[in-house]
Image 1 (cartoon, rainbow, N blue to C red):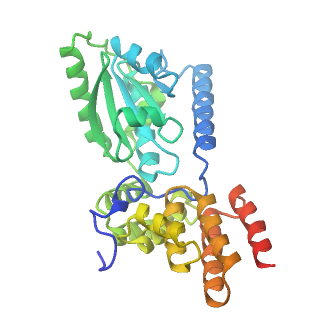
Image 2 (image 1 turned 180 degrees about the vertical axis):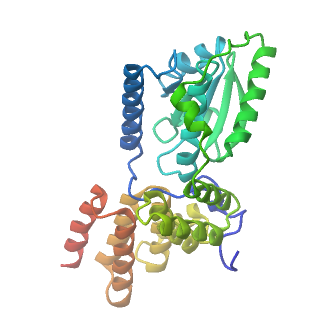
Image 3 (image 1 turned 90 degrees about the vertical axis):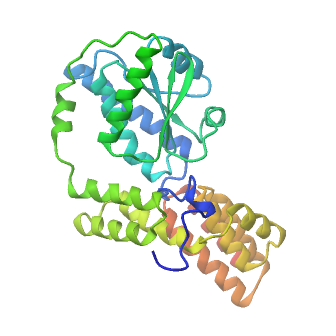
Length: 330
């Protein structure tokens, strides 16, 4: 690792620094709803094709449905909780693996997906400090499983142990079920080079090894220049390295206390963007532009334009902020 880059113990090595923020999709609720609808459509198609599991194996859980979908269901079958967020890169690598394994299990256990941004009460009740975090609930009792993106083979071993724990708790062993044919064929496929590189990215983020993460992203983009996760992740790396060892909460508080200080404002805006608060980051820098002049004003404007490029020109917050910036300038 290069000197001056964030160390594994820095404040960003928690939720946000462990994976690439999808800076083009900062609306967690909208994306969570879209993904739930896509899973429902895929299951409906699988039912029509005759390839769906015999029972529902993956459910989207909310604060309101938690008791019914998790606690009550866990009295008869283990429920595995996937706590994720739309901006979390490792979550996007882990969730498809868990969904595939749940379909293969064909009802031996149920996967309950929880968007922690949209359902904070569940995350608070499990005292979640970083994501992805995976728990099980067996007969109403929580069982911590693991954090971070893990290799599929290791996840299989953890789930095998979970089933033994469930049996010891008095749950009947599930009947052996044939995996869904399409899923079984997919499981037999060797991971692609790009898949392996994304796994390297996840490992590098866990170690806060930004050089290794950057190298893996660059290799992915050589193989597939349009890979959206790699493009967003590479842009995000610059943001993470720029923040360095700064404490995001302290940086934001310092900027709040001195709102026209361009250095404090740019650091705080970076922290806010990494926390998926694009509107707050943009508003902060527009305030500096509006109340300063000369080099400070130019620096704030240039930094703001750079953040626009990270988020993407069509994002609603970017569109609104561009109008506000024009008003502040003229």
